[in-house]
Length: 176
Image 1 (tube, rainbow, N blue to C red):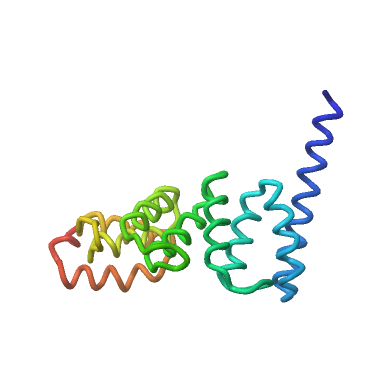
Image 2 (cartoon, rainbow, N blue to C red):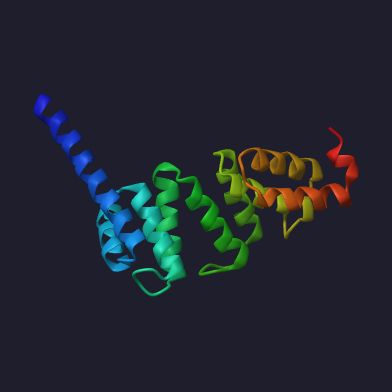
C-alpha cells in the first residue's frame, strides 16, 4: 500500500512537470509541442490540460482552428472537474453559434454555472444578458447590477462600462 501512495505522488509530480513544460512551450511559441503534451495529459483525464487543448483549437494554436473540437474539449474540462473558464468559453460558443447551434438559453445557463463558481468574466456575461436580455432570458436589472458589482470587485474592469450604462438607463437599480 505504501509503495502505491509513493507511485501516485510520483505520477502527480510527473504530470505537473509535463503540464508546466507545456505551458513553457506555449509561452515560447512552440504551439505544436505544447498541444501534443496537453493532448496526452488531456487523454489521461487532466481537466486543465483538456481546457488548454480546447483553447488551442479555438484559437488555432498548434493546430488548425476547429471550433467543434474546441467545444468537445471544453465540455470534457467542464464536466470532469468543473473548470469554470471552460463553462464560460463553452457558453460563448452557444451564444454566438460557433461550432454549435446558437442557443442563448443554453449559453445563459452555462454562464450562470461559471459565474456561480466565481468566474468574473462569466459574471459580466450573465449581467449583460440579465440587463439587456436575450432569447428566452427574462430581464432582471437587479440581478444584472449584482453580477456587475461582483465582477467589478473581482477586478473585472470591463464590468465598469456596463455598470455605468445600466445605471444611466435604469438609475433606480443603482441606489445603494
